[in-house]
Image (cartoon, rainbow, N blue to C red):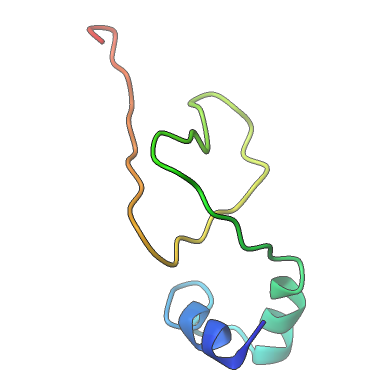
Length: 68
């Protein structure tokens, strides 16, 4: 992770107060990914196995109701 990327992550909770060595250990596991419009990252009811950290762009979160 570059110093600029580290600085970006440190702007957000819970990373803000995390000691830098611990944060570096966690971020060693991070992988940058790009998504296109209409890509589905997560579906309601699925087990959460991934943590997404959005650094650019927009994400839309949708929850369907019984009425659709």
